[in-house]
Length: 80
Image (tube, rainbow, N blue to C red; front, side, top):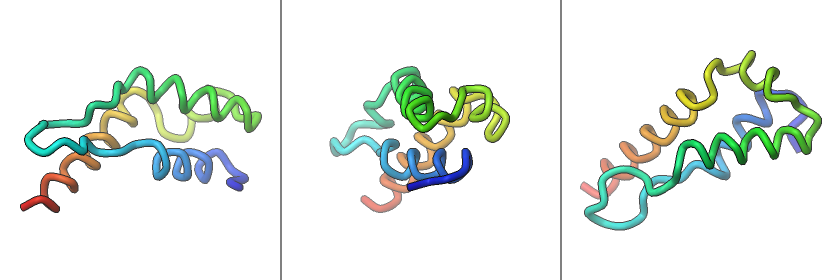
């Protein structure tokens, strides 16, 4: 199990941020706000406060949006 804030974030993103799976649908169907809330809640269960997450990656919404955009871009490229 992750032991540092960064390890937790990386683990969580790998297991929670996924591209849109429907062919022809641009972008992910996941809500950034819901993902941020889940990240914060999961971190809290690991005794990692939101402030520690923000210190590590900055604005959580922007960070998750970027990870989601990357996941979607990779999936679109894979389909070509």
